[in-house]
Amino acid sequence: MLVQRNHETDMTIRIGIIGTGVMGADHANTLARNVPGAVLECLYDADQARARSVADATGAKNVATSPTDLIKNSSIDAILIASPDQTHKDLVLECLAVKKPLLCEKPLAPSAAECLEVIGAETKLGRRLVQVGYMRRFDPPYVEMREALRSRQLGKALMLHCVHRNVSAPSWFDEKMAVTNSAVHEFDIARFLLDDDLARVDAHVPAAASGTSVGAPVFLVLHSVRGITVTIEVFNNAGYGYEVNGELVCEKGSLSLRQPAHLETRAALAQTITYPADWRPRFETAYRLQLRAWVESIKTQKPEGASAWDGYAASAIAEAGLRSLAQKGGAAIAMERKPGLYS
Ligand code: ISE
Image (cartoon, rainbow, N blue to C red; front, side, top):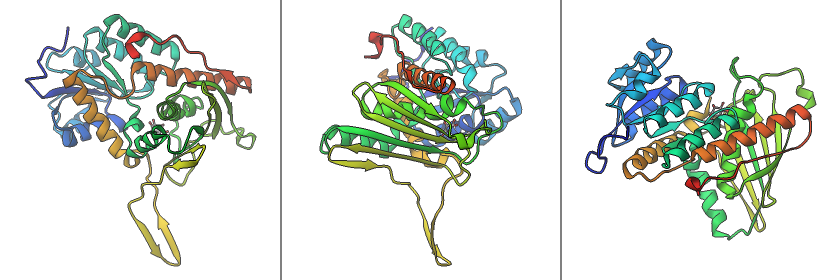
């Protein structure tokens, strides 16, 4: 079943959200308040009371009792999937089976094989309906960095240094998730900024952190196909605040992200800026622009943002990263041939 309505004439996209935890609730709020042309039609969460309370807070019209009911509901045009990572693939396939556009939170799936199943289903359809929630592609500082690199004023890119720190890892965040759930953002933004694929990864956990499984820092050194070195530190238990840093070193200069702090306090012989407790304030603009672009892309049928192929690439790099950790040595990043749909 194709999306039934003519979006050229009817400009409202009716959205259903699966998963109303931290990100599902945040997206519901943004869609309800900050995305023209979107209507929150229905929410689903395994915790029905949580779905109801997010619906009450955002004015979503209904709460579904199963994700399948929501996906098949003919009054829903598009679906946002924000449920746990391991549920993504099956839900994406269900949406593709009824030919509905969807935005799936990252990662597209924790394993490359699952992402390839999605790519198989989408290429069979012959239409791009999947967008993956790699929201940094809409973050103005990263977009500026990419444009500056493309202007060639600083010459070629040589190295990209990325730092990704969270306050604390939740108890369910297993040791692999530093790579499959956090570092995937860095893999995706590296590919986006450099316009290049990554070929090799060497991942380490500092010996000094051995014994700490959940939330131990992971340091990765990657090499792009064109020979750019990418370093990534992920530390999910950094304690002090949420911080994402990036520096792109080029032949004639370097480009760095500034912390978008809004306030600086001078008092008691100190100058202070504060860090957010998690990623939502830091990437608020990126999330808003991502959702606006998604809704617009449904109307125009011109895909935007990270594709299923990009989702696959990030998960394939993560898989090689886990291999490298297990074998305590570098690992090659194997990728399938890119189908024409994603060129
Ligand atoms: C989380 O799932 C996110 O997507 C955040 O952006 C990231 O910073 C965090 O490390 C992830 O766990």
